Amino acid sequence: MKPIYIAAYHQSPFGKLFDMTVPSIIERAVTGACQEIGVEASAIDVASIGSACNFSLNEQGLLAGLLASVPGLEGKPIEAVENACATGGQAVLSVVHKLQLELGDVGIAVGFEKMRDAAGKMDGKLIGRVLGYFSHPDEREGKVFVFPHLFAEVMAAYMATHCVTARELASIAVTEYANARFNPFAQMRDVTLTLDVAETLEGVNRSIVEGLPLKTYDCSQISDGYAAMMLATREGLERLGLSPAQCVRLAGWAQATDPLKKAGRDVLRPAGAYRAMQKAYTMAGIKANEVNVAELHDCFTVMGAIGTEVVGKADVGRGARYWADERAAVTGECAINTSGGLIAKGHPIGATGIAMIGWSAWQLAGKAPRELQVANPRYAATFNIGGPICASVCTVLAPPA
Image 1 (cartoon, one colour):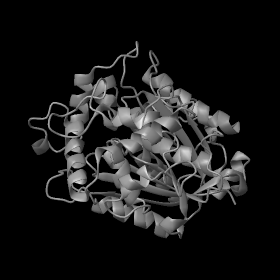
Image 2: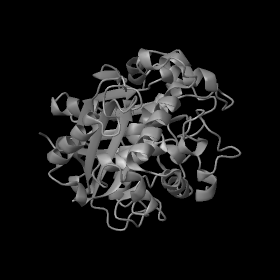
Image 3: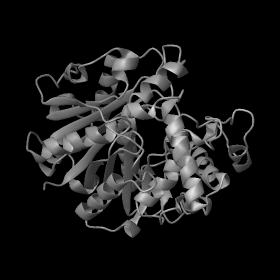
């Protein structure tokens, strides 16, 4: 296989894009990535774009055509992808596959979500209904907000099965809010969260589903935002005026999909997620203990715990304890979600998977904010999911060498 490198990464601040239109979001994403390395969009050979809720919330389809409207991209091989919350990661793999098929040497993956209106306000009931479309029809009945309800059930099962406390899971959110304060792109960068507040059921930290343990601070954000990543082969880097020694390498990648229905399978140990992560490690030629940077799909705190186990940093059932013991801190054994994660950085669905890889690349290149920069980054792992731990996109990144 051809080595694949990250030539450029660009993202918006996550939170609110106000009156920015979908066409302008896409154009800004592409031009922003190109400006990072001083090239024109015409240097791009292939592209993929993803947005999970664009039909339902923005009444816009054929995103590939909007991407082709960016000057320099007309007439190029472009496709739109959708894989629920793993849409961004899927867009990256789509570009990688095109480069491996020799359809070109330079590609761009674009992901975005516009979930709020021009005033920055959201329709919570509409968004809850739309996100529910990414679940199995049989598991929606009786659930007002389908996805929080499904993951509240996962959280309850995780706590009961592994004797995990609410305080241990709350430590995940507290760590991420602390990291977000130093990330200029993070949605919750101006919010301070203590462990006592995150654990206690009072005030804004209300119960999401009656009788289940999920609370407000256990949840990721409803966010606008975009991200774009340029990927290239060695030949592509040469055209862009870059060398492999300047770029983070996408050393391993894999994707797997479990059945959509949560019932009837072990969601606490999702088979597809473990399979994809192991395949990515095998492709990269490394083991989990060599990774000391990771970005995980913490749509809810319980997924921060399960994700820590999937990437091999904790045994099954010990993921929350890994955070509580501060082993996931910037100075810990493996710095996890130094970006703030989905809980504090934000979760613009189509951009999320790209942003995970992009932030990890910044860490390996020494470009993260000083307060969040891991001292000696070795390898990075990312784990992006879609649905009720259904679709999994996993990557391993190697530092410039």
